[in-house]
Image (cartoon, rainbow, N blue to C red; front, top):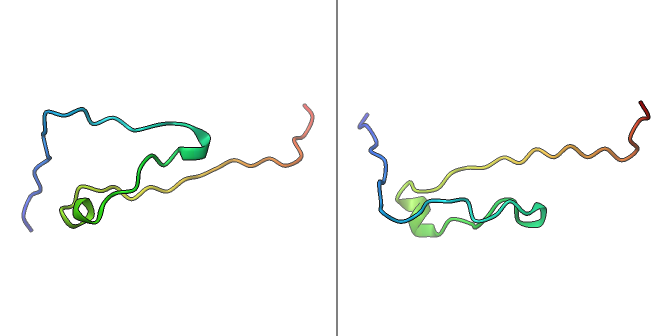
Length: 54
């Protein structure tokens, strides 16, 4: 198996947002997926409908 080398580009690599509505940021393009430049993300959400008291 060949060792993968990281893509060390000069551009900023920052998550686009952490807004609840858009917490996944942007979808990877087909080219990014093909080149291995995409990350699989699993989102876990704590959804408490009726919060318990104390």
